[in-house]
Image (cartoon, rainbow, N blue to C red; front, side):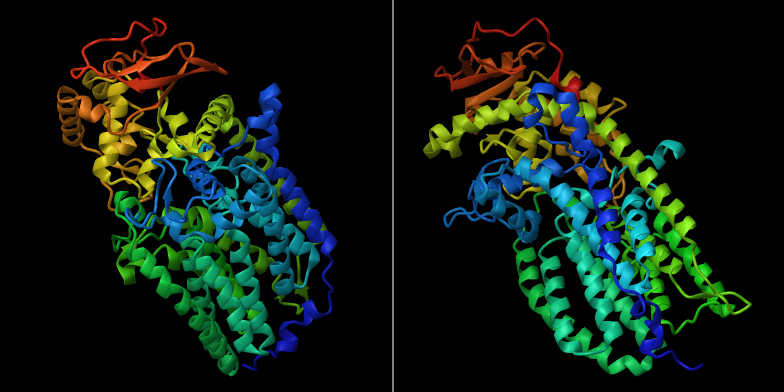
Length: 640
């Protein structure tokens, strides 16, 4: 079969000029949609709207990322732990963490925020519309330079970026099938990972395609694409590995289908590989210096278990079948560059979700499903709609303007549903977080009054949700928080001991812990500290086993012994400076009062801030007469 020339391959695109008004329109619509959760929260907060940031509770981890950005804004070093306020120092080096290794997006947010006097939470508010807009334009450009159609490109923006959760069988779709929800809203907008890195990923796709089609100056084009890939290496693991896997896929398909392009493709890939190796050498050096504080949840684990039936793979399989039928019937040409590109995106989900069959290693594969594979298969479908399909009569088939309009409206409608449902599901948590913001701001002011002793201050939050969110605003260390386990400041042993201390101080006895561990909702809080995120969230570790009764009973015995042997040495390490409790409905803190003296307290919003002094009496026998209300609901029953 005679191969098509580059000019014939790109005939459509060369006859059509890009009309940015279509891209700007689609990107603007997407941006407004991305702001819906924030506007929804502001409309419900009334007078405290300025303190309210709309975290996506369904995606999780945003508070941990905000905490790292907040630490960088405060001028702390790259290796830091915002939950314990431990920094890398010459006399006390801190191991690398996934935050310090993937530092590019964090600094890209923190440095402008510091220059503008902006907080981490405010920076997150601006990050969402910025990423939505730039990603929309990038998708528009990618689809246009492949299909040559402004209308398909504009429609593609909404299809690709609004249907990510649907293509992953996540979000609102889980309501219909009753499955567990791992991702919500628009996953590519999770802050700051992968949000701040996602436009770079799209830029890499564009640069590779332009080089493969132009076939001019491949070395310079490869160096440029390699530099973008190098930035991705230090940005987000799942994006750079997916980008590299896609490039290998595309190059192999290209060399098989179009051997006459071999020289340019090889030179381009060699240039990309050169820059990539230069980036990966220091990357793996940093990896070797990371701490194993968070168990297998952040480490490569051994597995050769295939994953062939995810939602994205099923959709990709359907598309590959359609393309195969089209090639067999000569409706499309296997040697067409657009066909090769479409196939590469359709194959990507199978590669990244099953690479462990070759490497024997895997790390949190669920993140590929949420942040990569669903978008890859949607791009493939959009590109397939722009192929030069030929009818048996010889006429070219293409989607009508009316069909594109209805598809765009359908994608926009589903995106609006996702945004509304996500905002509704996150409303309670975000309303509470907005109420808590005044406490964080007050603690920040307290810390800045005497910065010389800031490192020595530790705050105990009765509510672990508050402890999790505090470091995103306040520079003061917390006794324990669920996301403390993802940083390198503490070992697993110390993290568990700090959790025990939190439970003890907040009046959680062995009986209450037993009721919690054997209850129906063992998820957030202390279960994470005892067993790890990967034992509680499906998809993080394919080797993770359900938490057994024996393991739960062993923790109960261990905690019981800890309570029985608690002494002043433990009470003083770390020494607490504050305790935060709801003004109404606080728990019984008599265990805390055995070892600490509280002042009369300061009312901050709906909470009371007490300053603490370690007691002088050695046995901790005396108890302060200062007491809370008569409500004694164990903190563990309130969502630990």
